[in-house]
Image (cartoon, rainbow, N blue to C red; front, side, top):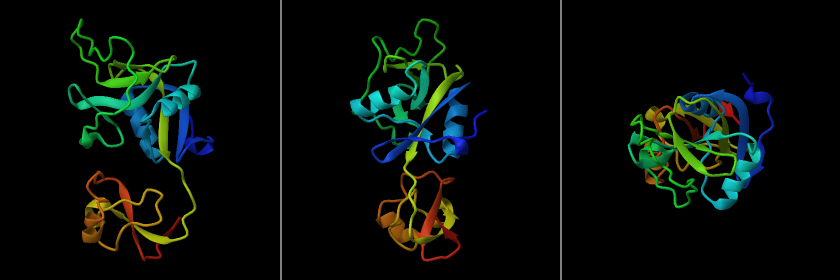
Length: 193
């Protein structure tokens, strides 16, 4: 098992990526990426698709696209409640096919060695690619609270959008965050990044 803290992430635009050459089921891969502060990779453009492929070109690898919530409505692991249909997709011919022949269903997506996306059963074991916002040294001081207590998000941001839940909601920072994501509120000296 690889220790994420010893790995040096690859950078592309405002994100960091890790290719983990350890074969695990999709859910385990997502949990490991989440523990690193990210998710299984989302891919929004052809350029990003090619970049992610360059990380694992000799291996198929899990990415974050899935239809675990609603069959046929694919979303990225980073925001499963949005049921975001990506404006960019790179399905292989005949995909997604949900394994219609056997009827077992395929809810998780991997990128193959040609960069094409294929849906498969989530319990198949594959290496995976994680993605997160680049970590930067933030000069502000924050208090870290659970989102259901304070609301909002401060994933590597310098401006949390307000000092309380109401201001966070007005700033649109709460609605996309699951309740188990930690967030920060400006003005408290208990945590410095």
